[in-house]
Image (cartoon, rainbow, N blue to C red; front, side):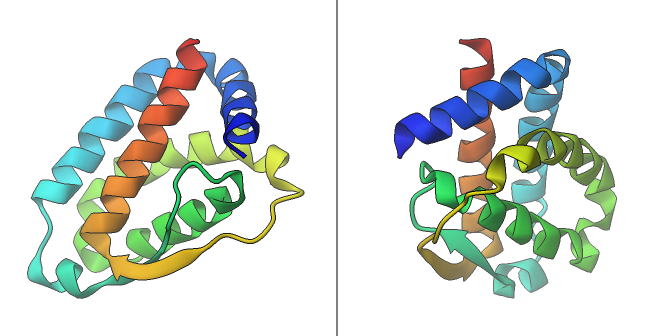
Length: 128
């Protein structure tokens, strides 16, 4: 499964190579989002993949990001969601055969941490 995810992220990295600086920007914005978490956001529960390395969980990450985006507290991070949409578009064509993903509803902070891990791994695979 890890090999499939690596190949998927590598393919996305090749098509998204000019966006390498965007990966760093995404991580910076996510860090700011974590720091700016309000009490309301702490109560937001998002379906979060149990295993971020599971290739079957990429669409779950995208769905959780959409849920995060709809939160009023996230309006000031619209730049993040615009940049993430570009990454999402580069990965989406490869998701046609995605299977089942094991998830658990967790608070937004935990989801954001997993999202940061996902972006870091995507960034490392695009540099390889």
